[in-house]
Length: 153
Image 1 (cartoon, rainbow, N blue to C red):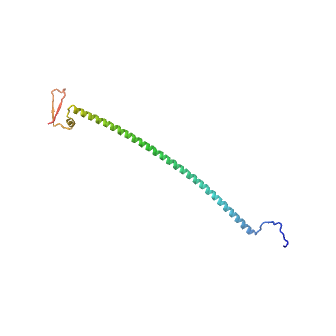
Image 2: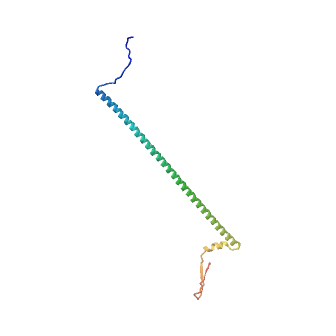
Image 3: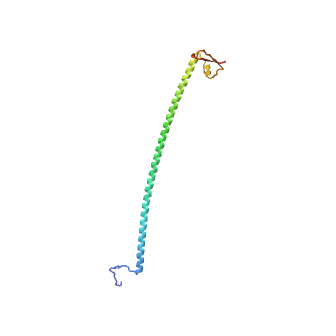
């Protein structure tokens, strides 16, 4: 072997022409500026995403509350409707019972008249007949009542 042995290597930096160094420094500055701009844009995007998420969550919560409110209003309306129907049904049942009682009383009256021997047909027809002659009895004194008599011919 030939006799060179390297014991230590020292790097003393790189030295280039001044124009080349300026170009290199400018490139480093522009890369740093682009990186900072990208990081700022990413932070801006994250902030906007968080804002949108918060707004979306609020809208969902608001829609949920409105839906619950509408459901509650519908439930109350249904309860009112059911109550009104129950009242109407009760009123109709009471009216029907009253009508039934009135009809039963009317039937009892007509049966009692028939049991007493009264011609029920004549009684029913009489209010609808018109008199063909009117006989009037008058007296000479004005204080006495003046009866009238209707006669069917």
